[in-house]
Image (cartoon, rainbow, N blue to C red; front, side, top):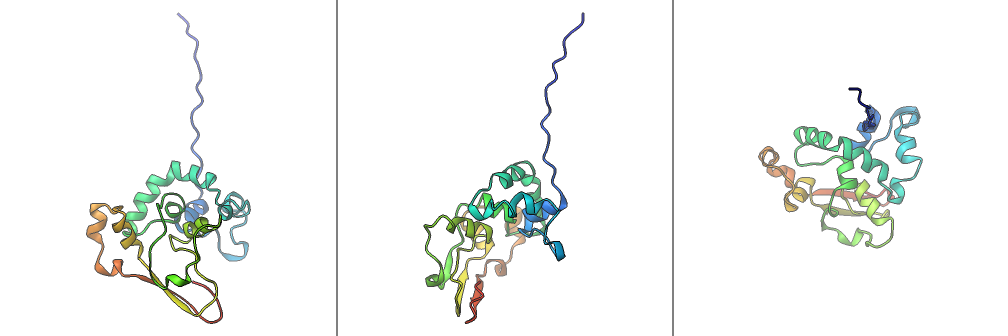
Length: 175
């Protein structure tokens, strides 16, 4: 007996180009004279101004599809750290400032959260120096938030938990 076949559309996985993968892992969108033009990253995230304005929808869609594999590979290669897209999308809060907090700009304005999310958890700092600010390392942050896996914890040494230092000179090049 003949049957009617019902065609159901298959979900199409968004393609992750090498340039988009690099961006999701490092936050870098290009190098050389084109600075990312033509590799999909510029048009997808930078030119649109999405990340500058806190709109992470397109990055979130890519991360939802590719993030678990990228994150697992990242952790194997870089224990005690997280890739750019994780900070941009999943980090529950910025890293703690251990010294030099007077140079951290206060939270509140709409740009404050997108800045720390795009800076691997480092809160926005003054752009005029000289100053030195110490923030907790990524490993210390992940340990404090109970986000380290057992294998990852075993791979880390005391040096991974040491604070990170940001300095700005009198020229005001920021952190």
